[in-house]
Image 1 (tube, rainbow, N blue to C red):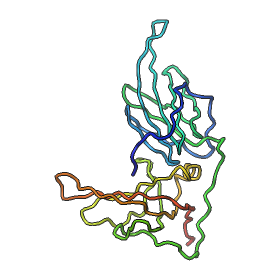
Image 2: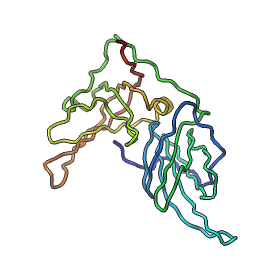
Image 3: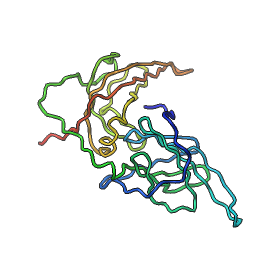
Image 4: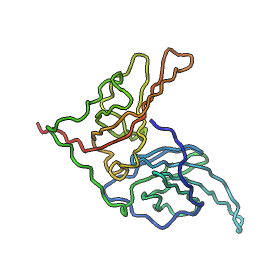
Length: 236
């Protein structure tokens, strides 16, 4: 549950950098983006389809130039890629990316951690260890400033880390959590999309807005991750 904001110092616009080798055994995420839209990925990096334009070349033919912007933690990068370029992975802020397909106003972009970042494995959750924070099972229990635990799973369709199973919502409420510091655990999260994780987090703030013309409210909780571990399945 995130707002898509461009932050940090933007680098100069440039053509895609040197070829990039993806991290082994991790499937790239596939993002479907329309022009001027953006999406976060599992590592917390934002991918933004900024613009697309057609230019006539000196030989009289036409080329489509696509501008992509990437933001991860406090770093940003902008690449411009030609329709005539090969669909190889290029480097962007510790990730590899490429355009898998494009049409007039929509792109399919593939993004994955770069092998140069190295494989960072999450520690396993210690079974039987006394819980340091209550497990979140009901959104009515959330209190600003308090620390909770939650099991997390990655939704490939929405490209978000979601609490699983979903906590009980308040009556007539739609509720979600925005993780404010995913990039701090980016290398670990980017390689753990198919796993169930357990996180400890502190609730920073809660905002509730009424949905116009409906007897419904939307509550968003902003939370900071404190620790993340790999939750293994119990043996039968």
